[in-house]
Length: 253
Image (cartoon, helix red, strand yellow):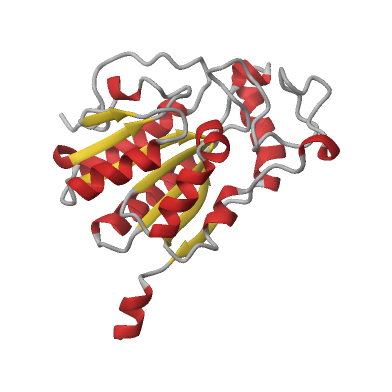
C-alpha cells in the first residue's frame, strides 16, 4: 500500500495543548518536515520561548532548550557558538520577539548569527490573557485595549520583517501565512530556504508566519482565518524581503 501521508518523524506523538483553531500546530508540522527533509533532525537544537509555544520541547523530536521570555535568540547564539556543527532554530511569538525580546532579535541579526528563527505573529499576547502586543492592529480590541488600539496612545503596529531586512547581517527574511493550502506550501518552502541559509553558512535567517488566535480574538476558528486575510495580510504583506549572501563573499567574486 502506498503511504500518502504520515506524521513527520520530526514530531513526537505527544498531544499538543494549543487551542482549537490555533495554527501553531501547522507551523510545528512544517518546521518538523523541513528538519527531516534537510537531514538535520539528529543535530537540531530548538529553543522554545515563553509564550503559547512554551511547551514546544514536548513536540519537536530533537534536542530543545527553554529560554527566558524574549531571550531565545541570545540562548540560540550561545548554543550555536559552542556547537557550530549543530543546527539551531529559535521559535518565538510576537510578544516575545517584537516586545520584550526586540533587543535580542535585532542584535542577533546585526551580528549575523548563524541561527534560523521561526517568528509566529498572531497580533496579540496569547498565553498571558490576550493583551495588546506591538503587532496588534489599529482598532483591534484586546484585554489591555478594550476600546481598540489607538495610534495616539500606542503608535502603529511594528513590522518586524521589514525592520530586520534593513540589517546587513540578516541574510534571509520572509513573511508567510498558513491560512490556505497554497500559502501553507509557500510557508514550507520559505522555512526550507531559511534553514538552508544557516546550513550554507550565509548567516541569520527568519521566517515570520502570520497566525490566528481564535481564543483571544474572540471568534470562531473559521472566522479567525477570514479576519487574518482581511486585516493582517493587508498590513503585513506576504513576501520575501531579503535573500542575500555575506558581503565578504560578494567582494570575493
